[in-house]
Image 1 (tube, rainbow, N blue to C red):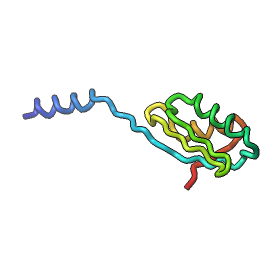
Image 2 (spheres, rainbow, N blue to C red):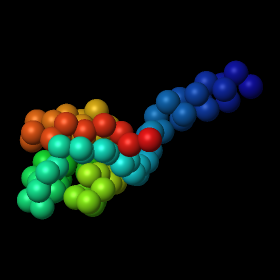
Image 3 (cartoon, rainbow, N blue to C red):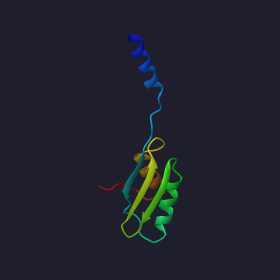
Length: 91
């Protein structure tokens, strides 16, 4: 019985942790013209793990779908801030 538990523990430890696809909406209030979304979209698309971006000027938001095994929300907000458009998670 002990060997069974040890074997199961080894199998569980060797199994990969599956990343999930997540979608987050970022508030980007600094977008002031119709060209701003282009810059925000470009900055987000350069982040590894980003699968899709939809930047909406009228709503001053960016909807980002990403692989949470490759990136996180902090990296997304850092990318927009580095491009000159600070953002935060929209609640």
